[in-house]
View 1 (cartoon, rainbow, N blue to C red):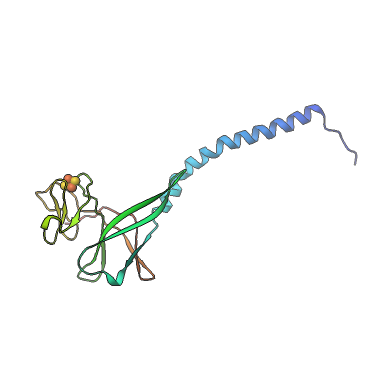
View 2: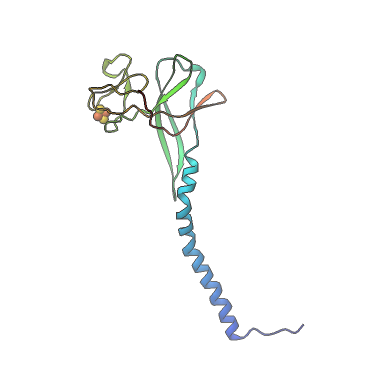
Length: 167
Ligand code: FES
């Protein structure tokens, strides 16, 4: 087999093709990632976050559970802290409610301002029943969102809050 010297034209072709391909990949990768990110984020929505709350210790009285986790957005990671009001209903099932008021987003408190057996929102005197159902005649027009729950090694895990409809 004879060795063929690389001509000047061939050398330029190879070099320019290589450099061009490298630059094209550099431009295309962010676009591909941008297109795929919503799919990846959607997949993460089904995740549960583990709390420090032991399920055995829950009672029928709502207790405040704070939990933190690392959230990965497209290009950065941040620490997020969330809260849930958690209790066991009369069947022993775990109920976890979002504390975010459905009026304008303030934080509701269990039996706040001496409202017995209700969640109270201090911003505009919003009230909710223990189930999270909004009480007519107060500003909120929808029930509190509900967290999907799970138990792992005896500890409560919470998913992403979802709207609930209560008749
Ligand atoms: S924000 Fe809760 S009542 Fe207005």
